Image 1 (spheres, rainbow, N blue to C red):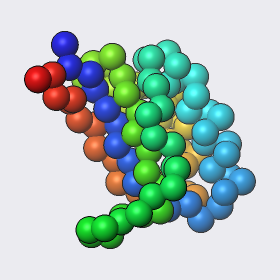
Image 2 (image 1 turned 180 degrees about the vertical axis):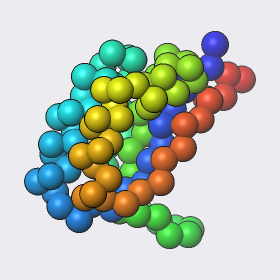
Image 3 (image 1 turned 90 degrees about the vertical axis):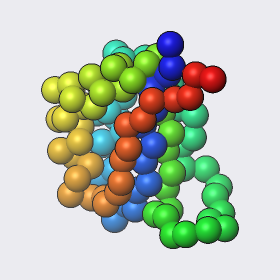
Image 4 (image 1 turned 30 degrees about the vertical axis):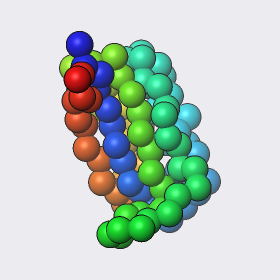
Length: 97
């Protein structure tokens, strides 16, 4: 079964407030077995324009990725993120060859 992924590109306007989001989001990510593969490390943009923070989170499958995003725990965390950042998020099924 193919894994599911969140791929996000964010720009943060208040780093301290964003920390509160990260703390609040952690239990939801753990509950759905989310695993960080990329968490805002060094990046270069040889093509196009993206926001400065790239995040990739792997889930056991697409349904888990969708369920985590739609969970009340994550939605409460998202309410902390929204005022202090802008971004794009895609929930995508991985390639299972």
